[in-house]
Image (cartoon, rainbow, N blue to C red; front, side, top):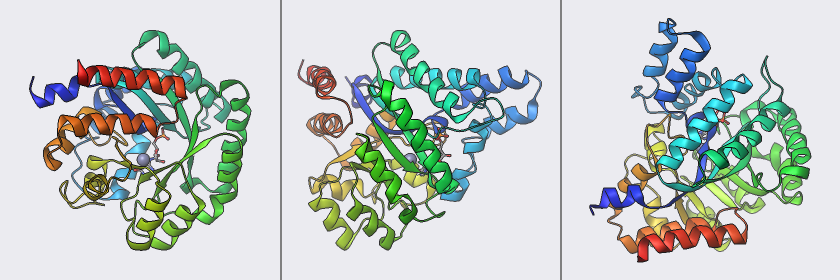
Length: 337
Ligand code: IMP
Ligand code: ZN
């Protein structure tokens, strides 16, 4: 079997994907047609251009999310979007998915309803797509301010009373150029005390003071970690903080210059725990298979490397021990049969 096919068929683990960034152009067009009818050409054009913008900057990438957000303001839209995303990951042979999303209040739905709809839909997907296990990491959007973050935490804490089998951790994301981490420390400590793991976007831009504070604060996994260098790298290594590497996302946002120069290489070669992730497969027009194929070709990974990367992803996931064992068996069987 050729390598690309081998990777496509490989059971994969996705630990860093944002719901509204994961909608493919096809799904956006389907949702737009249902929402606005066949004749809304303007929105159809926007959807078609979704992945075409070649201007690589973090700010340009952040301008794309409102397109998806406009189509997930109703319970029906959100449900359809989430089912499409889970289907797409499952079709890419992702067997375990930790999906993130920021609960939002819209004119049609409260934040509580947003979270409830997401959780209900994940349970529904369990019967529709039985080969994939989906968990949720509610996101705190750092660009929306501390009051919004407190509200999110209180809703999540309430939901945890009955849905702790699905809600596994908290993500801190949003435009990293906006607001400072200091404001969020107390809320994230509360999350930790409530048995939630922390997956924090950190060092996505070059801000070594903030990166230092975040690494000292601690986290269960670090999103991106692009600009973790020198002393901060020592801290990340001492604490063995796993880093979620999103190759195409970083390239298309302009935070790394090329695949070859991606920090994945040094981290992997120095035996630091790393995972390959998509971040926003819809926005960046990628899949987890594509990311593995790119990594395999760029860094000359062997099938043994692919197996070790996949098993490491299970280790650093927020699944429980029985789930971890089950996924590891699937992966080992694929590599060793
Ligand atoms: P949502 O939370 O389901 O609406 O997914 C989209 C959101 O994820 C965006 O509005 C951002 O807040 C966040 N996001 C997606 N990609 C990134 C990233 O690379 N860095 C920081 N935040 C991101
Ligand atoms: Zn992200």
